[in-house]
Image (cartoon, rainbow, N blue to C red; front, side):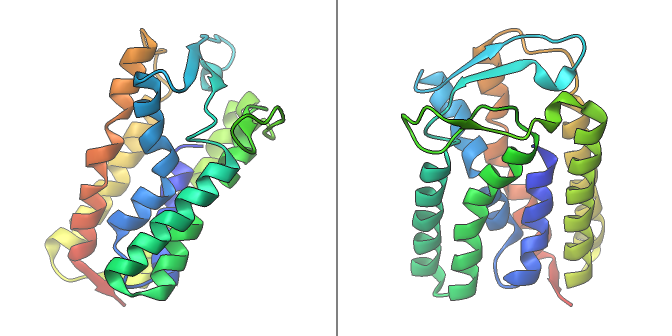
Length: 216
């Protein structure tokens, strides 16, 4: 799943109103933030396998036990939540942040084929495989994303024009990135990894937008 993770990050504002949207974006996407780094250092492997019948299955996730196993995401969530609480003393926000990290595995479980591990070194792989049906995948992703945006828009209100128009610019940008993911397969794994690093600076935009909105 891709854009659905952002939907959950948007919706989390309702549960933790004092937590920045930038923080929830990082938590919900933490697995995908570290994945390209682990690819670049050869700690994890992916194979580019173009499938003309299904553009969603152009990548064969050979091994990603550290970024995308349930156990490591639970540990990463607890760690990030504890760090957030140490910095803010906001208990509810810390719990939400801690839960958002492993939520990535849960949402991926819906769409991935059987390639998600429970823990590093585990042989079992999980995934419901909705990726095999592109139409169903897009519908599920857009439902989760739209619901999250709607919850965030209802939970907050713009304090100025940046808060008003910036939100919808962010929504459209993410939709554009999602549409771009249906393009041709990347030329190499290195190119894929470097492109995926866009997730790191991307969190600054929701953080900036959120600063110009207040809880309704």
